[in-house]
Length: 69
Image 1 (cartoon, helix red, strand yellow):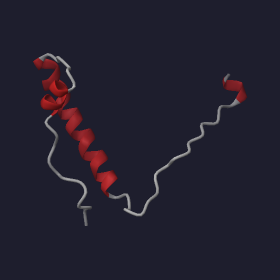
Image 2 (spheres, helix red, strand yellow):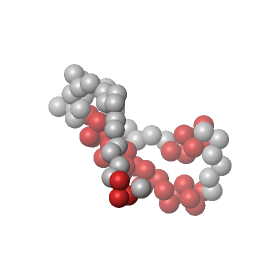
Image 3 (spheres, helix red, strand yellow):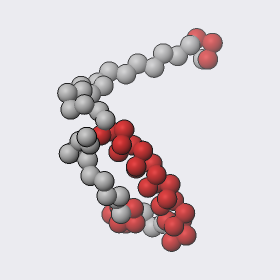
């Protein structure tokens, strides 16, 4: 069962770009909309699987190997 906190409708990418003040050419919007739709579908499905009782990650450590420095 899907979580009620997520909807299945796709965002209006053109409207969101305009709201952010991005002046994207029409051909660029036409090219990237399918990619954004697919990314949104994958991420929203995964986000819907996160239990409501899950705690957010508040501490992240990225260990760097000495050889990489």
